[in-house]
Each structure stands twice: as C-alpha cells, then as structure tokens.
Length: 307
Image: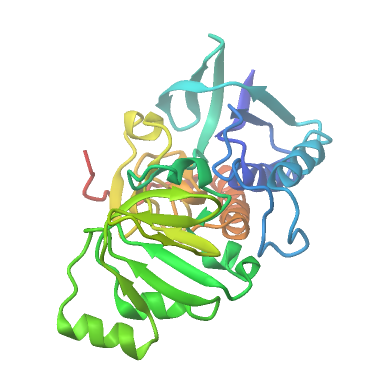
C-alpha cells in the first residue's frame, strides 16, 4: 500500500497536519515513538481551549480524534530511514516494516541541549523553563532567575519583568560591560555573577560561594537541534538560528528536498504547543495542495547546510 503522506513524528504539529489531511480524505501514516518534548511538564498553558490541561491528555485526546478517521494509520515506533523521491518514498520503521508514501512530513521536534548544571535536568519543565508565555504567569510575580548560556541583551530580559522580579545569573557565560550593566539597572534587573554550583529544592540556586538564592522559577535558554538525524540523512538542508539548528523550510513548509515537508519545533521558532499546532495545520494544508497541484511541489531554495 502507498500512503499519500507519511508523517514522521506524532506530537502536536504532526497530529495537527495529519488532521487536515485525513479530513481531505488522504491516506496518512503517522510514525511516532512517543517522546513529546514537553513530556516532563504537568500542565500546558497559553493554548486556547486547553489552558492548564496536562499536555499528555491533550496529545491523547488528539490521537483518539485522529484515529476516528478511516484513512489514518498510526504506527507506534521509530522511523529509521527515508529513501526515494517525490511520489515514491520509502520509510523503514524500527520494527523492520517498509512503508511507501507520495510525500513525507518531518514533525520530529527538537532536543534541548541544557546547561550542564547539577539539578537542572531533573527540574526541566517543572521549575526550570524556556518559555515565559507558557509558564511565567504561574510564578505569581515572584523572583525569577535567568540562567545565561551566552550573551543575553538587557532588552530581552526586560520582557520577563512582566512576570516577576528578574535576576540574571551570569554563571560565567557572558561579559557585562558598563553599558550593559546600566541597561540592566534601568530595567530593574539584578545581576548575580557567582557561578552556579547546583539547583536545589524547587528552583533554589546554590552558588559556588555557598549562598542559597531562592526563586519562584528559573528560565534557561537551551540550544536546540532536530531530535533525529533522519531529515538531514534524507538530504534536507539545515540552517542556524538564534535558538540553534533547525530544518530549512520555505513559507509553504517545503524542505530543500522535493516532496519532503517539515513543521513544528524542528522547522520553526519560537516554540510552544499552540504555535506548533498552527504550524502543523498549515503544513497539512500545503501538503494537500501539493497533491492536488503537483506542479507546486518544487522545494525551498537550497540553504547553506549545517554539517
């Protein structure tokens, strides 16, 4: 059997794309290994109609709704390789099965490369966050610590002051000249230059000089990269962004390989559940258009690949 579209990655963006396609009565195969990026978070915020809901519940509900459509096939597993060309791709899954599709959609998400600080990984998504729009309100305008992993302009930190009093934890990751310090002071941002030894309790920071700094929550800026090398192995170009490396796509979600599309966190920024859903829905529409009007399937212009 040849599917119209094979979606690799069945989190929010992948499912949003699949929904548009099955409603257009296209045959869709979703291959997903069940590792959502926000699996560590207990609540999802900022998503209209789902504010405060467990993100796992949102995903499970979406899957149940998708599986009500007869043209949807779901495979729990991992895609191992993608070969072929437009209208005749083959995906090999981790169970050894081979699947043919006319189009491929990578909705593979990203992996977060977190600062190497003891106690941070265990608190990621619980008391250490990356998105204030997703988690800032729940901090109750308390003290917020921002862990630097590189230069952060004072103007970016100013944004966080709407959610609480902000302290920049330099942690040896950036240099502050007099101009930068003056800007921080102007915005009411405190500066802590001592190195971080570890994170304790909920979001308390133990400094190298032995002090314990108490915060309602911490924000870190991880460097992101696609969670799987599969798209790059299939020939899709990558590009550098301020948040890390992502798949290069054009305005129609096309990658540099004809017939292969991408959406979600691996192909767009910034990142949140609602943005992933919107981007995925648009990708589904663009995939459908490429099937109806095959002359529109030409790829994005080749980007300078990051290898």
